[in-house]
Length: 98
Image (cartoon, rainbow, N blue to C red; front, side, top):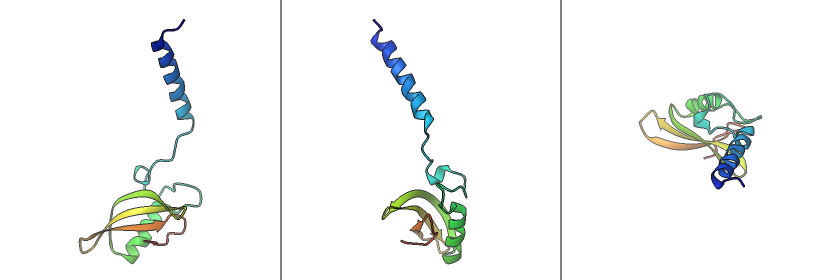
């Protein structure tokens, strides 16, 4: 009979192998700028260009979100006057939605 420690180690190793088979997409802040998160999704670099044209400032942080079932970029943005705002942008169209 196998010892519980060996059996646990074998099960753990198998789970690690299975987990590595299908990696999940990285959050937006972990991906290089400009890399799309999914097919049909606008690159973050393009979204930031659009945002800078409409609201001069700079990106502080970005995460991926979901609004009404659509993928969104949730961007923490520092405006040129120093105020910090959170902007929600549709990741497929680049439209500012909040």
